Length: 198
Image (cartoon, rainbow, N blue to C red; front, side, top):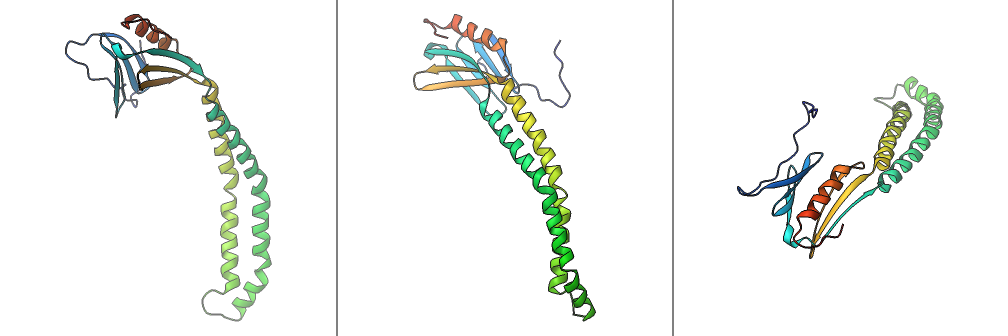
């Protein structure tokens, strides 16, 4: 029994000819790869790609850890640590600068200057920046959560299927090590008109 959450859209289905027979299929998140008696077709929400079986020269399936996601996660951790390191000194600096302008701002108020004087304006600006600086640790924590998610996705990796036909390729993948894609490639190999290499 397959659990379907109410807020998830069903996977896209390819348009098949009336006399086209489905041999095997693999669900790729929101996309679907289908092997028919004539072709391999991958359908998504906004696209559909296919290769005739008679043109397929090479079929490969491989698993890889997504190094890019791991690197992005590691860089995000470094940036988050830098944000944690600068948060308190930046806020302290801004508050000290604002306090340093207190004498000049008081003199402007005592002299009854019309509107807001330069010292008063700078004091308010520095106070506002100090308030914003309070959010730096929150940004650091959000960046750490993002980094953890990216590293997890990189470690989980993905299973990639590629079909080569002359000058065109059809490539699709799924998160994690997915044995169903290996089975799908095996079925493609069985239905190729000539010897397949996988």
